[in-house]
Image (cartoon, rainbow, N blue to C red; front, side):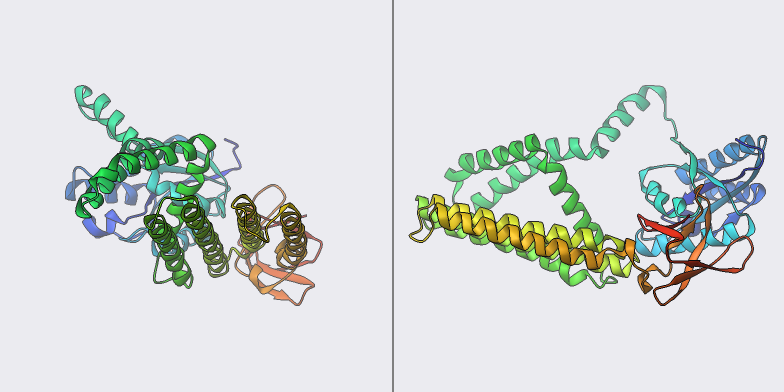
Length: 409
């Protein structure tokens, strides 16, 4: 650590155990106050890991102040982790930085849940160190317990050894209710085979990520809620419609019709998901991602258009020959060019708009300077310097836009 650095040691209680169990609200600033808060929390619940995390932060603070100017603080979120929790942490972090403008942050945490605040912290100052505090158990229990817990927390392990057997058992129960147990073996082969294909091609990770994104984003407080709900319903309707079609028979015509229906509903599902993410980007001041979402939606449509045309050629539709398929490919190519041209309008990295208000401003060397407060037409932006408290004006061309932040120079 350099002598002129200002190091802020942070411990984040995202689910607000301090408030619920000890009646203490953040931000808690200073070594003595943090020790008092940790002791009160430990007395109210000796099994609480957040108390140990605060003690770990104090230890880290004692180490840091030997080398540079340092301060310690504890931030508390909300009882229900999510947008409200992150909003409170954001406000408390601003309050701490007003009194102690840090050039670097040392994060001390007790689990992966608190790691979700890392983007908030990095928007203010770089994280130069991170420490995970794990409370040890008896040596005989510790190894087995943490091995099992770590394995269950691993999404890849859980999807392979918990999700797939769970789907198979659920499928067995549904077929038993429908008096169709004779179809269980075929259905099981279909589920396991499909999963192995997705796993082998790498699509399983992307699908799991999309599902996780949808479930985490389902909130009545978001404008995008109807789109996420529509995404789920379209996917369910597509699976149901395809299954119903196959139920009418097992010949080639019914199977191809079912596949065609499934592809159509999957395309609608993808487009609805992209629309939801775009609305979220505007609401959460991340509109710089809209261009990427727009191109993703266009890619989903083009992929469905080409695959559907190819399926019609393979099934021998009277009008579908190779020349017709080639025309469809050319139409898709033309649509892709038009979509690419339109996406240029959505590229906020080259424009000054009101969507830039509220974004962080950084210097060339990565120091956080303040937040964009206003814009002057298309010529300049204004931000208040957190150190001098003066309003600074930056003309177009004197800054660059990168991943949701303004960089001077």
